[in-house]
Amino acid sequence: MIKSFVVAWLLSVVTAGYGSESSAPPLRVGIIGLVHGHVAGFLTGGALTPAGGALNRQDVQVVGVVESDKALYDSYAARFHWSSSMHFASIAEL
Image (cartoon, rainbow, N blue to C red; front, top):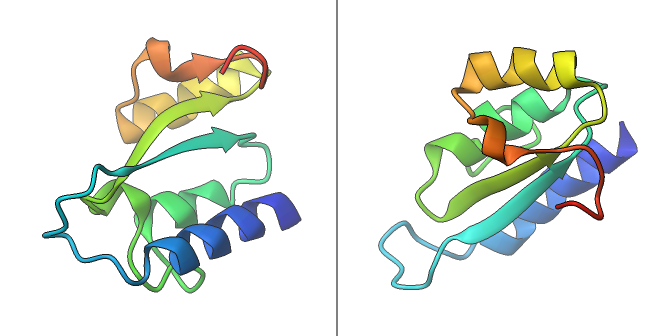
């Protein structure tokens, strides 16, 4: 839970000053763990992501997800249209 909050907060702080017209490449983000479910707010927006969810922003790119539970990854992959190439079983693989 704390890890998800920290990631969402950090992303909000880091990207708050950047506009979508920026010529800088998008911030590449890896998600570590889906078990608590808070990542859905990070991805789609909510109280912890006032700048908008990562999937709705041009300046953020989700590049991989570390989740040891393949079934849990598959459920998120179906919901957010992720390919199997984004799934990693460990941080070392990512």
